[in-house]
Length: 363
Image 1: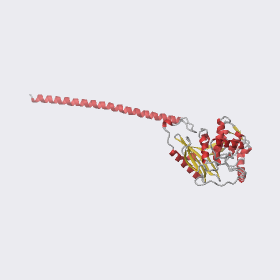
Image 2: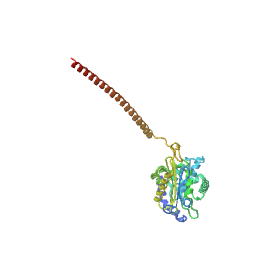
Image 3: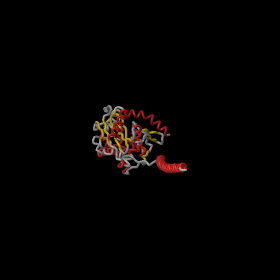
Image 4: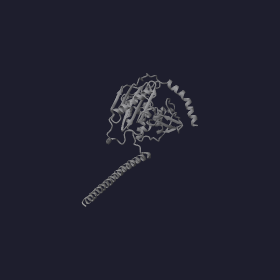
């Protein structure tokens, strides 16, 4: 029965997408080569390591979902909701186009499942379902988004949707800047739960009948990368909020309005690497046990065994060296003893030979 529902939704999706596209408000294309705007920050201090057109207004597209994620995680922290709460899907959320997990009003999913859908699949229907669950309506949730943006100092941002899709006719387009998104990311990386969702490369949905795969290719190609979110629609171009952590330090890079996806990823990787090059390593005695967004994993049995084996080899090597030293001392003693005995025998032989000669000539 589930397969029939999914197949039916897939068949109906092209029609709903065409209707959605037809109703979209025409927007001026703002993307450029290699990008419209960019900024790189030290996540620990907020220091700007690089910026170019960081205050230029742009369309965030699905990178905007990071604000949706922040509000949901803060609702979980405050006890307003929990990750295990079940969310009843509404007909409004099921009618969303673009990237989705094809939610049906007859279904229920946990907040956690929908957050994975939001971040891994970039599901617009999951964004609407979460917004309605928390605030009662999309409009009320958008108000929360704008209030939180102002609290974070995102002065040049204005949100009109919970998902970042291009606006329908009669609606306004979401706007932001690279600097504003950096402020949002600085807040998100303080929360360890953020990385449960942004670092996931693949995730099962609907009992494994739907496999979600991330749009963030840097998770597999950039060392230490564990987030955060990509975004795209035609007028906006390709955008990304990327972060990586190495040796206790974290860098955040925002790129908005790149004309090509591969160029966006290349530039994001370059800026992250450049950011780490400019950071001084933390002193070993000041290395934090945990950093923003990192939960120190417990050592696996394999690691424990490896460490124990290494210590055993080191102990064995030390013992062997001691034994070699002891053997060397013993052989030196024997060598000296026998040399002494040999000298004594030679002296005795010579004395006896001399006396025998004297007695022979005196007779």
